[in-house]
Image (cartoon, rainbow, N blue to C red; front, side):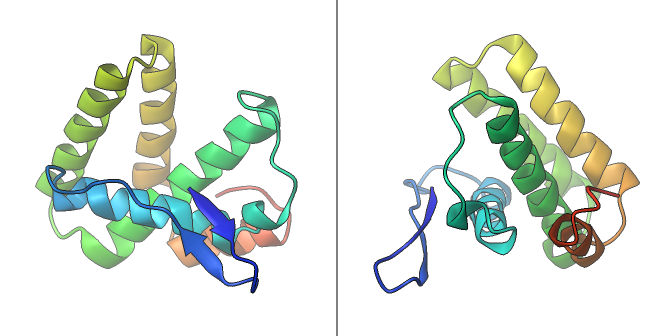
Length: 131
């Protein structure tokens, strides 16, 4: 979870990474950082599962996977390990199949079809959307 502290500095709450592969750990960190980068944490939090909430999460996922691709991933196996872990964890938590499929579709589209993470972020900040 990403918030701002009383001093307005960014805070990211992390989960226990002990048993998660590095690919998944990095995605979670980049996803939460994306909420700060895009200004989501500076806006009122939209109702859970509302269009605005789901868009914020999709944007954070997209920016996270683009940063992983651009800054960290060096081979396809990293992406595959991440995807397999994400699916397994979402299933374990109890997400419905449609939620998992939708999230994977967004992540895959971003990973394979979008340009650099910086360009994506710039488009979001300028209100142009994605790609």
